[in-house]
Length: 146
Image 1 (tube, rainbow, N blue to C red):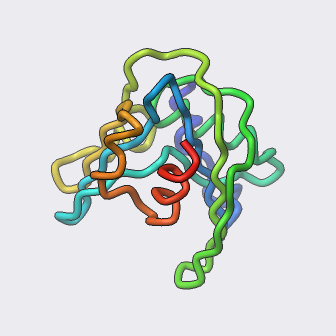
Image 2: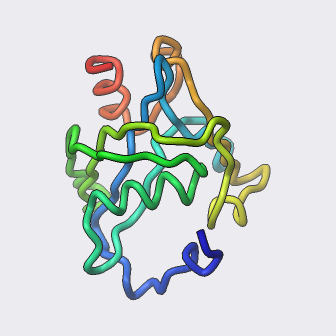
């Protein structure tokens, strides 16, 4: 990844959409541990689509940018519409290809601080029910389907 890839022109972002990758490796799932404004939670790696970018490529790119993990074969698992944010969320189940230990990269690495904390990690799926995974519907899907 080239450092400039992390700072794409804001004008190229498609607003109102977020794409996330659910990467499974054995009995573990890839999550990003977050602490923001005193709130602790976990999310699936993901981000925004650029104009003209294929949704599946968005997922692969975002997972690698945020975690240094290579994923492939994204398949749409579910989608949701957040009326409060006016945003559509698309979650793709992906195959793990390579990368043992996730490493924080990109914009998240540059913003990482005690007030805006990011830590990518593999989490045992059976332990996920005890975690504050957001949004809640994503956690529900994970627990029901994996």
